[in-house]
Length: 321
Image 1 (cartoon, rainbow, N blue to C red):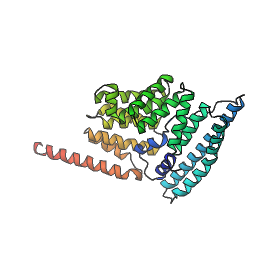
Image 2 (cartoon, rainbow, N blue to C red):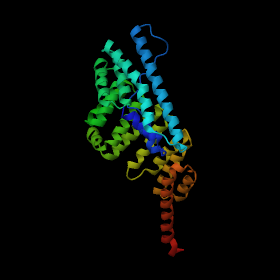
Image 3 (cartoon, rainbow, N blue to C red):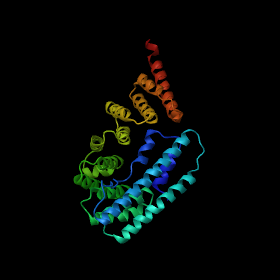
Image 4 (tube, rainbow, N blue to C red):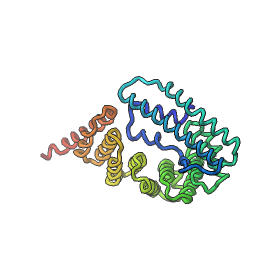
């Protein structure tokens, strides 16, 4: 297992965890199939439910391992990534075998194809995941998660226009799912040239479309911090910078930040935006709220830029004073 999950572990084990790094780690490619309440009377569905429960338990346990190792790393502990990776491999091995056994007995079960694809994708076996998602889509074309997952694949491998088409289909089938809007927004923003062609519009309108999709996603998941920070970071790509909108977006992310690390990361972003807008006093105030050593390089760089901007302003005003 050498893919997405281990990459996530490696990022989390690093001592540097600014806001900009967190989002790619916490957001999976699709929507997991939730475990229904109560036991099904159908023996096949009951077996499937137990498989999902085992998958969820394994994922939760691995997540907890990663959180603990990350906490140790932040305290300066010397941690072996190889040891953690080995534990993760061992924990997921029986889940993988259980999925294989179930599919061998029930090859036309659309739900297990979708769930197994998500599991495989999370552990870095992307090609195998795609095969199961394609099968799930053929077995049940009314399932929006299958369309979303395949859209993510096309967003990575192309053609991107097909990704846009599949996201639209997922949203059509389930218009209240935040993840679909979030993924679609990210694709539109990241593939602006393709979006210009697909929507037949200029770049500024592409930005507007991406922002609208992010905002729609946030409407359905108002407490989703990674989503809120993704929305705010979108403004960095827009020229000229929409200062007031960017500040409003970062302030919302600050409001729902979950811990001091995320809050201080937001202050770094707000200082950067206000520096670019010439609001130097406010930028300094945000920097004063940043005390965690992990942000020192960013904080010091922005601080130098503020100092240089203020010195330049003094020199320009000097003769007139």
